[in-house]
Length: 250
Image 1 (cartoon, helix red, strand yellow):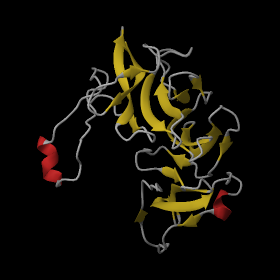
Image 2 (cartoon, helix red, strand yellow):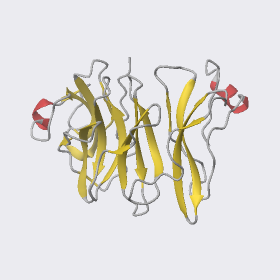
Image 3 (cartoon, helix red, strand yellow):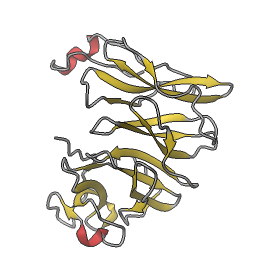
Image 4 (cartoon, helix red, strand yellow):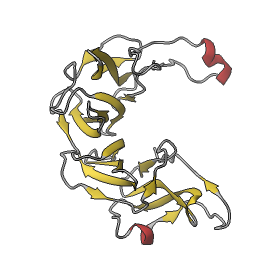
């Protein structure tokens, strides 16, 4: 279940007894409840979130927005959510910095994860990515025009990609070719002006030397990735590095 704390300016110990507002349902297929939610950049008291339901044996999600006090709940998408590939279970949410579009990843009944987008009023729901790969971790650019994400085709194929929010202009950004690793520690973000990005790549001497955070132009492609990336900090090539989850928020 997601928890919204009305006042986070307290010692960590206070979180144990802090007031809680539960905005999502827990289902047997996801015992800890959906973890997908995003703050509305145009209204600091409002969030978007996913709520799961069971349709027979299949879990499905719908998107909602609500005030953090639990009022003003509005359903944005159909329930169950299905865009032609089976019921969709939302995994991650991202509200574009301009506040006009919500992008999200969702897994269908074929266990393929794709990216989708919907306008803040619930109209214009569309699928952004296709194919047999698994796409996750969408992060919208500051102008809301592009989405940076992770793609896993299987084997040694995990890399960063970008696509426009209208589903065009898909392009591979990195050439890491990560092999069968958990993407939990990976991460990526846009600079506040949208001209650069940061992402987690392999360590100084490759994947088995840990991970590093790199800074690179937003227009980088797989062909230029190695030449253009710059480590955000100096690391001895003989030293194991484990830098993860970069954030470049204003």
